[in-house]
Image 1 (cartoon, rainbow, N blue to C red):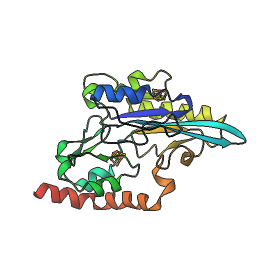
Image 2 (cartoon, rainbow, N blue to C red):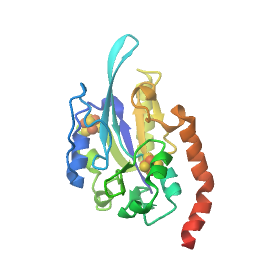
Image 3 (cartoon, rainbow, N blue to C red):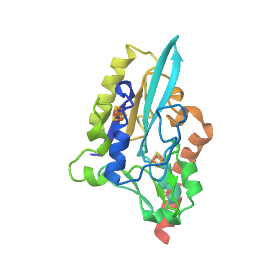
Length: 239
Ligand code: SF4
Ligand code: SF4
């Protein structure tokens, strides 16, 4: 059975333990940053930063709220990036877990096209031309360990396990949070393996929190990627 994450943003404290654990496990360097007047740091995902805790301050119903969103690759069930690449040596899906994996062969892809195909604005290009993003800590998962971000999260915001188990947990928590905030929702739960629960409108957390609401162009890209996948797959088998 495939795996999924459940990210309960309602109990995230923005400690950034997950962000640091990701760096540590992947042996990724820190980034030079500047003080931008926010605890969010660095400013964006990068070739060396696969996980970023986004932070927003919003006034909702007259009260100041801190909204935290640990952003990462969603490991889409039908990944538009994978369909767009059409090259299993560069981007492939691990069938057992559902993890979407990028290899060094992404150097040979049209990076702009791959980045634009992602409805969540995730892949980043490195100096060597390759693309990088979260790989679900597949090495850990294949050895019976939790992804580093989940293992380190002290509040229960990051969860990981069998997909059915995560969907059940997500729906249980949604029911609880709905009693407090009627705007609570799960983000694109049927389409992704990183299922976020938010208490308020997703656009308040991050422009790319959800694929289907913001950008018609992006949603259309997903549909097109799905439509053309068989053609691309056939083409990749011929080379
Ligand atoms: S979130 Fe983006 S990079 Fe991750 S699998 Fe989906 S399309 Fe690919
Ligand atoms: S480790 Fe958990 S609580 Fe801390 S920022 Fe990450 S998801 Fe939030």
